[in-house]
Image (cartoon, rainbow, N blue to C red; front, top):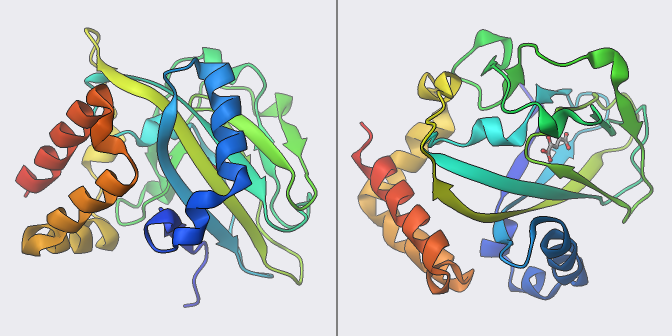
Length: 235
Ligand SMILES: O=C(O)CCC(=O)C(=O)O
């Protein structure tokens, strides 16, 4: 089967020129205005929805993907269209005000723990959706708890988006939440990554985080070390 929603994770690790993008410095400036001066880059990805077969991205909140429920997260994403994005080729759709709802219950997409995607199972009113078509190089910004969805690509051209995520370094929380939907995941990607890390990939990962400046930010560094240890100890 052809790829349905191919995604490149952290492209900055593979192409130096991406470090100099004006998009990156502008997006960081906006993130620091919205989240405060402590906001730092956390993650980035490029998503392709292939022409005629790119699937819908299910309703979800980005924070629901966070693997460690012992932390408090404050994050946002700057989602930039690399080509015109319309109602027909998979624009983002958001639920206004949903960032105030807390993290809602999710499950694996179609109840299949072998896929990476998760879907929100309720707690929001889909009738209040606002579609966000944008022209190429236009961007939309959503909070980590904004419930959102992106439609399938029914057009004859591919749809591309480049997303930069920012966060205030996560702090331990007294009120542990249970993101149980992440515990059941058995994706091929997770298995490959875990195998790669154990065979020395962890050194490359530490180096990539160094290049991204993670180790010079103490709170983020503590969080990342804990995360790396957890993934290494996970069977
Ligand atoms: O572009 C898409 O299809 C979905 C992107 C998304 O869910 C996100 O950036 O959080």
